[in-house]
Image (cartoon, rainbow, N blue to C red; front, side, top):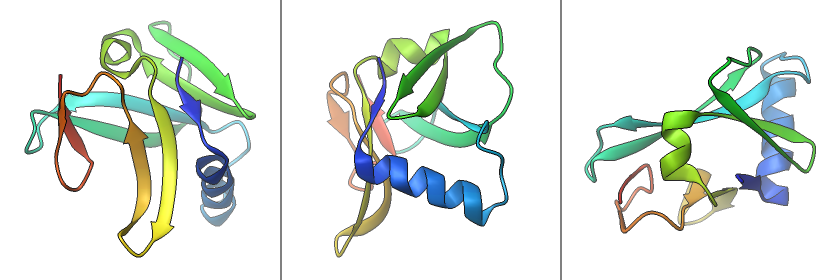
Length: 108
């Protein structure tokens, strides 16, 4: 399962409105090679559910994850921080053995 915090949910809803997106625009979370730790998170809006997708819903937010990325993301929580130490979405990933300082890449 992939979950979202209340702050992440609120920010996703705000972004949908700001970008003029429909409420059916889901969040797609995936993992790609790259970054200073070897793997990078990718987060986008997506209104298309593909046959290879796993669909999770938490707090009314649908999260799409392809099967390959799911291996790295299972149990992850998506959070949002707007504090002094940085602003943006953060991934709390129990599978990550190492993360970079910016939090955008990780290793397993």
